[in-house]
Amino acid sequence: MGLFSRNFNTPGPGVSENEPRKKGLARLLEVLGRDAWPFFKAGFLVFLSAIPFLFGITLAVSAHVVLFALLAGLIGGMLIGPQLTGLADTILRSLRDEPGYWWQTYKRAWKRNAVASLLPGAICGLVFAVQIFTVYHLTEMNLGAATWVILLLGMLLSLGLCNYIWPQLALLELPFFGVLKNTALLFLGYLPRSAGAMAVQAVYWGVVLLYFPLSSLLLPLTGFWVPMLLSTLIVYPALDKSFDIEKSIKKIREAQMSPAPLPTTPAEPGKTDTSEE
Image (tube, rainbow, N blue to C red):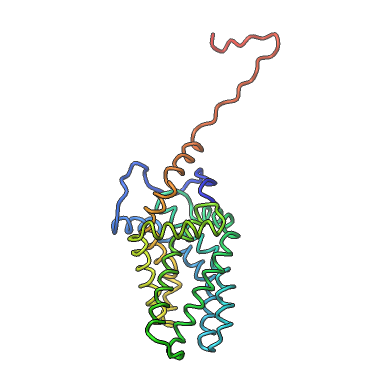
């Protein structure tokens, strides 16, 4: 884990550092054209790890047992967390145009971030499990419109905060409470970007929930990488400005690529160094 523990010596596809960076839709099409296959592979690994969560939530909703939802959120969230951070790392590398072969960099990032991703995964999984279970049972609870509004705002806020949590876990070496503090500051400090990323996530997952379980057929294909790519593309300038991501990595790359000085061998006793004569 960490912004300052990267290895830039791995060869692989990339772009020229002098090539001007595109923006908006052109930038999205550029990274998709170059890295769609790594996005899909990283997203598919998230989907595989999410199967216990999806199964547990489906069972909880159909059986009307909240305990199943809690277990699905806690255990399933821990299983998903490391893969979500791995997906975030893959997307961030693409957005900063970093060269490298996907599987090599993914394995290194996964090993570095796996343990630190367990607690955030468990907490986020628990929150979303309770929210999803409540959505499917609100009509049976006979609660008013205010409850719907509160629940909707809670789900939107959860999605908005997650847009900053997983990228930070991929970039920084911080305790989880430090990540939460940064997340709140970033969310409020860059509210227009936060709102845009949150809207993308809300539309995508709203459609998934509305048409579930039919929508589960698309999850292996679009899964988690499509909404994370779109939302991270929106908030990436905020992350880069706050943490100086690209400047820091450029310095590390230059330090690692600069040739090391050749060792000098002291002259033997009684001999004179004549190399400059």
